[in-house]
Length: 350
Image (cartoon, rainbow, N blue to C red; front, side, top):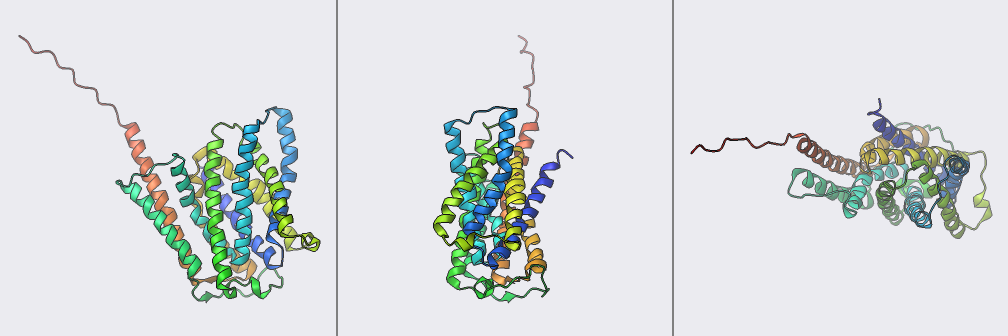
């Protein structure tokens, strides 16, 4: 079970992230401001992490140096604050299905930054290297398809959905303006870039920092402060900050506890155990779970262009991962190959 635990945790993480796309879209469709939503979800996570930090510090005092504080501040700004805010606006502008499909960009963006930081290598003269390069090109094609080709709207098979709320016309993805749709796709790609860099920076930082739980706690607390600054600048109407016993509160609690706390810690643990690329290998499950959830919970269909783009992103995902696995197999074979000992021959007799 120990060897299978990272696989189980990675799958569970994707299911939790699918739920994030669904409840976020439901909250935005009810009229909630995306920037306020991100602040509340981060604050909900911080409420959990603050006493945990105090407990960890009391149990094992470990001073946080100014250098590490600055690193954590930047990492949380890139991955949590920028990534979550860009993703929130993007899902509001497009759909939950498209938001889930964009997660398939993560392995490619993670791999690119891993190459730039010399954590991964690309050998274009090998089959594995060509597979990785092909995956990058297909990913770009998938993003372009998502942004510029919508195609016919495929209606949901189920007309009755669990989340009953009145959706304004601006929140229906199949009738939103082309400009809004393209902006949403661009922000989804931006969030994927942000999270890809975030995974790699976390892996690099955790090489010298002993506690993943303490690390993610600091990130969440700092991101709460950063998100508050953004939210107060973008939304100054006090009525937009009110929460009631409705889908908005449910979305905040779900994303704040199950995503900001549980999912982020699980991702951090998987990255520490298996590296930054491994976490993304179960990403297609996110799309499948979100499509099913959109049918049952939101009554939301999908555009043909989004479906084609998602399929291209899945192809790019497995192309990169296949190339990665091929390289690992070659490394294992080389490491297990016995070293040849030169044959001892007796010197020629005179």
